[in-house]
Amino acid sequence: MDSSQLLKGVLDLAVLAVLDERDGYGYDVVRRLREAGLHDVGDASVYGTLRRLFKAGALTSYVVASDEGPHRKYYGLNEVGRSMYASSARTWTSFAATMASLLKEGHSDPAPRS
Amino acid sequence: MDSSQLLKGVLDLAVLAVLDERDGYGYDVVRRLREAGLHDVGDASVYGTLRRLFKAGALTSYVVASDEGPHRKYYGLNEVGRSMYASSARTWTSFAATMASLLKEGHSDPAPRS
DNA sequence: TGCCACTACTGCGTAAAGCGCAGTAGTGTG
DNA sequence: CACACTACTGCGCTTTACGCAGTAGTGGCA
Image (cartoon, rainbow over all chains, first blue to last red):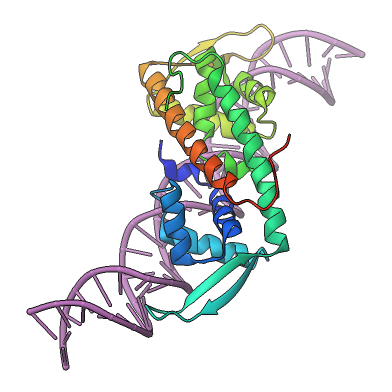
């Protein structure tokens, strides 16, 4: 299974999650997502998601000069973003639970072992 | 969050899961997925997924006459399908774990309550 | 001082996949 | 005989993740 398809609709949530922890700029969000386990996430996907979320009114944005490269466009959650995060997290959690129950009933082998 | 996006890449797994439990025809698979909690899954999505999986060599197919409607095209897992199921289930499980850990660190409120 | 690596972001075109909807058929009911 | 329910197919749309190219700023190195 191509894990890129698994991200559909979930990358928003992942980005909201890292921004909820602390404000970040694109390049930084990419790194944090990769460190969190989303090793294959494409940078263009993250930048696109940030722009989309910003356009949807979920993020604040401010530019900060950097002394080790170009300026950085920081993003942070606003009220809309936080409530979107909370609601998306709930949706995801219940969806994941549904999938988990689907997987465990009547499966032929795989005793999902770490 | 539009839950239809969450299905991307996961509907295959869900379909494999219900077929692993027992062979089924399209209409039946739709019903079983909905009963399992995927209330909003579209029938065209399921039929499309079944065709795609069959074309990919993961499913067997046989037609059975029905005395309460048109014939039914049953699908079942073959060896390819079973190993695809096992591998997809593992991928999903680890992906879900990654997401869960992302969600729980540093979130502002939501103690995910049912 | 010219080249390269790393940082940081934007924009474009592509492909995957779920969905709505229309259409085709078979069966049973009023 | 029209209608509802079952069962499946095909078409076009939309969302979204991705690859890639391009633009820029900074610093290291020969």
